[in-house]
Image (tube, rainbow, N blue to C red; front, side, top):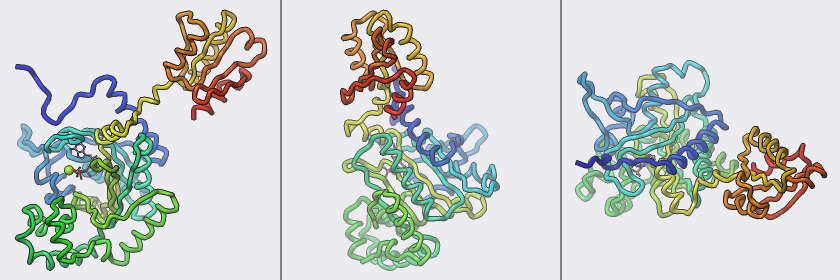
Length: 419
Ligand code: ATP
Ligand code: MG
C-alpha cells in the first residue's frame, strides 16, 4: 500500500519552506517593532477550553474540531485557533500580574475538520497577535493597523479593511431581543443553521451566506447592531475610526460583518482582497479572559492564514523571493583588485549586506552578466585604477546610475541604498 498524507494536509518542500520563513520574519519584524513578544502554547488543549473560549454555537466547536480521548480518558482537542490557548496561558501564568498590557504574538499549525479546497485545509497555519489588558480605542487602531501592515509587508495588493462594531453585554441583548421578536414569525423560512442561530446567537444570522436568509433579514427590518450601539460602544467605535483616519489606515464600514466566534465584543474586522476569501480577521473580546477563569480583562487580537496569504500573493503575481536578491556583487577588474575585493566582501558581509563575487575567472563583462542573473542591486568594480584613485566604481543595476565612492564610505553608502 502506498502511503499518502491525510486529506487536507500539505508537505512543504524545500523552496516553499523559504517563503514561510520569510513570511514569519516579516510578521516578527513588524510586530516586534510595535513591542509585541512571541508566545508558544501547546498544540492540543483540554476540549473544554475551546468549548468555553470559542463558543459552542460556532462552526468550529459544533462541527470542525479534532477531538479525541487520550489514553487517560481525557478529552483533548487539536487547537482550531490560537486565541483560546494564549488567553489560557495568560491566566494560568498570571501574566496579568505584571500590571502592564500584554502584547503577544504567535505562529503555528491549527486544525479544523473542513472540506478541503483552495486556501482551505485541515491542518493550516496562522500567525496572530493578542493584546490583553487595555480597553482603549487606541489599541484597537494599533492592532488593526498592524494586521494590515503585515499583509502589505508580505506584498499583497488591493486590500480592504472591513470594519464593524458588534456591541457589548449592554447593547447586544437589546438587539438580540429585537432580532428574536422580528424573526421568530419567519423562523420556518430560515435555513436550518439560521434557525439554530436564532436561538443561540441571532447576530450570526448576518453571517449566513444564504440569499434567502439575507432577504428575510432585510424584510423583517432588523437593524444592524452598529446602528443601535449603547453610548459607550458608540463613543469607543467613533474613537477607533478617528484614530484609523489620522493613522492613514484605510477602512470601510461593513455593517453586516459579524465574526464567527461567540466571544467578540465591540470592534470586529476582516481583511479581504477582491476575488479571495478573508485573509486575516480580528476582534475585541472583553469577556473572554473571565470566561477562562481570569480577572475581568479586556482583550483584542487578530489571526491571519499563512496558506491563504501565500495563495493570494501567488495569484496576484507577487513573490517573497525578491529578498533573495544579492545586495552587492563585487566585480574584480584585474589581478590588482583581488586582495581589496576580498577585504570589501568581508566588510560588507560583516554588516549583514548580502554580497558575493565570481570565483571562476570571468571577464569583467561576464561578471556583470552574472551580477544581473543574481539580481544584484549594486556592482562594485575594483581594479588597479580604483586602487589608485582610492574610489570604487559602483553601478546601481536598478537605475543604471554609476558613481565613484571612496573606499571608507563604501559600506555605508550601500547599506543606505539597500534599505
Ligand atoms: P472562513 O469564513 O474562511 O471559514 P473563519 O472565520 O473560520 O474563516 P478565522 O477563524 O477567523 O476564519 O481564521 C482567521 C484566518 O485563518 C482566516 O481568515 C483564514 O485566512 C485562515 N483560515 C481559517 N480556516 C482555514 C482553513 N481551514 N484553511 C486555511 N486557512 C484558514
Ligand atoms: Mg471557518
